[in-house]
Length: 166
Image (cartoon, rainbow, N blue to C red; front, side, top):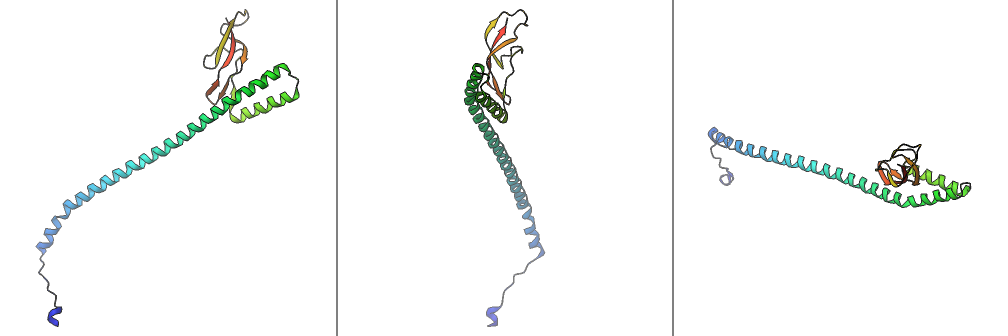
């Protein structure tokens, strides 16, 4: 029985250990190269993910701004109707109340009226629909506003329709 349980051990020399230690150097270089490649891929993917997040945030902001502009443009005719009613019946408390409510809503939304009267004509903000002779006014000065212009932030929703001096 003892004979069957005996384990045979081959002789091992120091030379054998040196032979196996020569091989890990190329394997180590290969692993370092793979690690470097994987690290590079990781950094590139992380940067791509961050760029995608940033683009998605900008797209969402742009869509929200475009919706706000679209809704604002649809509200402008209501304000025009209120202003026209105010011109016809300036003493009506109901119309005055509606005008104040709309002006308050515009202010909360960020819609601002473009100031025109007495200003020099600026094609970015004004649309001259008529030119008239006025002796006491400088040339290209707005003398009358036919329809108000509005801005949302730095975006012109609608240019003001104006009459300009010659």
